[in-house]
Image (spheres, rainbow, N blue to C red):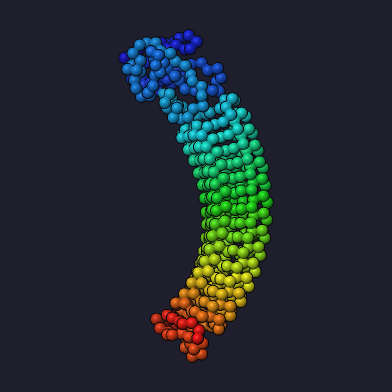
Length: 479
């Protein structure tokens, strides 16, 4: 059964609306929204409907009009305000009503979370009055495909467009100085982004997970490239960094599996941990002379990386720096490096030879473990300790000369080196660790002069293979 309700505007103008017994408050307000006058039509999408019955506001969404409005006359008007999707819902409008949004010209800031989760919002146009896009302002607007950011905006906030999976391109105006943390994270359709010369900072995770992004040029105004800035950008094939960047942050390009070309400028002093980890297409990289530190796992699992030259500015080669770079056949280390970190070249199966420079004092644990093609190694006279499992499993290593600076050969240092037929151990060595002599030639181990010189207490054969023997070694200090 239908009934007629008279609705009066603030101006006094009236009209009648026919509603059924099944009409909800939400549906009724939808009808009123199109009928009520708006002084600026661009503001209509920024408005909600307010209905007053008997001096009290009409609330609710799914309640029936027939029960909520006992009389026949009500007062209705539009409330113009920047609204969120939740306020759309509270006013009786559905977030799905908003597909195209033109923000009025007197708005100076889009507040935090203003349009978060507006899943049907497809296009946004901002006026030149807006100077800040607030934190999470358009987060998870999954249908948003087009956004116009005006030249008045100086800051794009934290998570501002995070999860906008339909956003295909964006032009950041040259008024913006800061791209906030996670600003475009997870925008999986974003294939093109223009970053202007005004930007000085690209925040933490700013473009992480933008899996369609194929190339990016970082302008020479940027000094800080935040941690994880382009992590998991699996289509990113080429990156050019300007001379203004001084640090490549943690995980900055981690798992960019298509990244084949990267230019690191002379301004960079540190390549932080995991910066290029998992960049499987990266075939070569030039590390500039400005770099002093290559961080933990910086190039780990760069399986196409064939050669690398470490400049003589580098003093620290971090743990796992080139671990599992299975194509790495050649590496040049300068005299500036003083420590080859733990696992630094572990699993570099194509590495055929290596020279440890005179500056190195310690070869870290498992540093060259399982480098199955390593046939030649030169250890400088500065090394005092060869770490645990340092050359374990180097099955192509035929001979090694340990310099007279070494005092300690770590546990399992040469275990499994099945081709090792000759080893020279100097008088400086005071300890040969557990399993360190495994697979050294049987004749060498049985030599009386060898046993007496290093003071081995016993040799216990555990297995014999071809011309080598696996042994368990326990030793005492040189007498």
